[in-house]
Length: 356
Length: 76
Image (cartoon, rainbow over all chains, first blue to last red; front, top):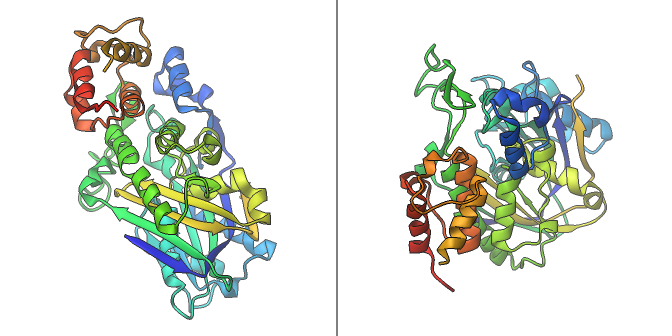
C-alpha cells in the first residue's frame, strides 16, 4: 500500500554493535567446512567478520545504549520523547513489551506511547511508517524508533548456512516533525501466504517449548538446528528478493517522481552481499550507489542494516547535507517496504561499539 | 538458448571441468544450497528467467535444468 507523509524527517540515528567480533576464517571448522568449501563460501558471500552479542546482552541493551549516547550528545531530550517503537524479534520478555521496559529504564513520564512491533528485515521502513503515523497525533512531536535484534540467538553456531552471515545490532533513530516542506513516499507490502519461507516453528504457542523443540539435530552436513531456531527456505527467499522487491522500488520511484539517476544512495537491507549485488544488477543501479559492505563487516543485523548502512558509509555527508535516498527492507512475513525521501542534514549519525 | 554455454556456466558453479546433460545434479559434491542460489541468480542475470524454489527442487539432471531455463527463456 502506497502512502505519503508530509513534513517529517529523520533527525538523528545511532547504531550500536556488540564489541565481540568473530572472523569467518577462525569459525569455519565449526561448520565442518573443508578449506576449499570455506574458500568458495567466503568468496561467494564476501564473508569476513561479524559481531555477536554475549548471552547476557539483549537487543534492548544495544538500543538503550544508543539512546543514552543521543541524550549525552544533546541531540535528544528525555522530555521530548512522545513515543517509543521497539521493532524486534528478540524481545527481553514474552511480556511485558520491551518498549515499556525501555520506557522505565529511561525514567520517562507517563504521556508516552510504547509499542513493540514484531518485524525483521523490513522493520526499519515499516517502523518509519508507524512513526510517521504517530506523528499525525498533535501531541506527538518526536518518536524514538528502536530497531534491534540478537539474531545469533536464533541460530546454532554450527549452522554453516545461517551463522556466518548473522550479526547482532541495535539502533536508535529519532523521527520528528519538521517545518521545512518534505514528503516521504512509501510502499509497504505483505504476503502472509508465504509466511513459512522464514519461520521459527517452535517455542511460542503453536508449538510450545519442550524437550523436543530444543533437541539439536544435524539436519544436513554442517547444519545443526532445533525447532526453536530460524528456518529459511533460501531458494524461496531468493525468488522473493528478485521478483517482488525490484518492482516495488521501481514503483516507489515513479510514485515520488524520481528516477534511478535522481537517487544518490540506495540503502537496501543487507541479507548477504551476493543477493544485494544481484538485485542491484537486476535494477541496473551502479554499484557505487548501493553500499553493500554491512554483512562482510558486521553480519546481517535484521532491521538495523539500513541505519547501520547509513552510519557506516555516509555519516559525514549525512551530517552536512540533504540527500535523496531510497530505503528498502524485505524479509520475514513476508514483508517488503521501500521509501524515497530526503535524508540529512542529520544532527547525529554514528556507528559505535557497545560498552557495558 | 546456447546449451553448451549453459552447461559451462553450470560447471563453473559446481566447480568442475565439465557438466554433461545426463549428469544427475545431486551427485555433484558442489550441489548444495549455495550452488542452487547461484543457479537461480545465473538464470535471472543471464537469461532473464525466474526459476521458482519448487521447480529447482524437482529437477534431476543437468538437462532437466537446461530445459527448464530454455522453456522460460524468451529471446529478446
